Image 1 (cartoon, rainbow, N blue to C red):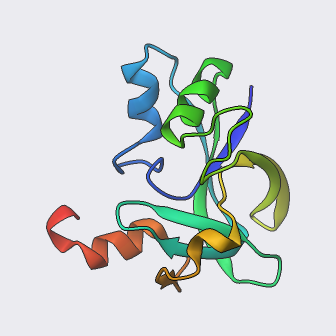
Image 2: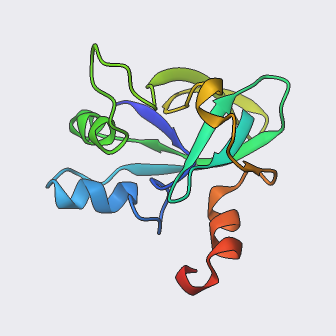
Length: 138
């Protein structure tokens, strides 16, 4: 069962909520393991964030889930990750921190070049940032 770290629109209550995606596809619900962080920088793409992994940067907040194998291709589709094609997001494995312990998770970062002109989300928390930015959608 893959373990994923979600930091943006796949988080609970967001537009691509992981649980809702599983339900729409008739896949068993993922298991929330809790909140975690990863070293990186978060950027505002408008309707979604992008994470640049950076060991020297502050924490980016997200949630860890154990997901059924069948949900992984759904996440790849949401993130527009296709084998053999250059895409904005990539899927890779990285250690995230939960309660001071590293946990290996799959996540979907973007390349540094993709964020050159975008606003940085200093808090590292997409949900809090989006709610403050778009209070009508909160």
